[in-house]
Image (cartoon, rainbow, N blue to C red):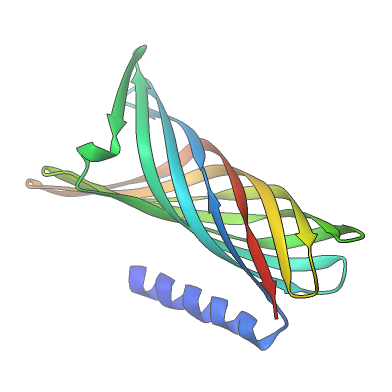
Length: 204
């Protein structure tokens, strides 16, 4: 199933090469806040990360575009609060800890001189892989996203940009593997995320 999803994603991404497009390269600092329940106990999870990403922007006309962002996420700290007790876990506690976020949606562009202000909204899929010596977790979140950016175009080919994305994930599917076996869990969640980005764009 995972191979089918990855193959479909790359076919979708390469289909953009048939059109005029911009390539964006950027970095970010994703911040995530998630609330869930386990056995009747409220659990709040906060995660801080840094990310590196590539985006494809396909202009429809001067005022509208289609955006695809793909970010590799490298979590740095994880804080878990339950029963008013907070535990902070650093990246060094894991053998593996990384993820990926994919956003797709249309944008409305506000133009003024060399400045473009894209306002976008769409869907977001995020997965996270984490493992220690005793347990491995692979999680998927599905949700919605919206963003506001500003681009400064130095010429027809190169521009610099900043962007703030807000995400709300509402569904999660995860798999956990230990030496005793594997289990899966799925259901509704309430997860908020904010990701500021800065980067450079190249128009083709």
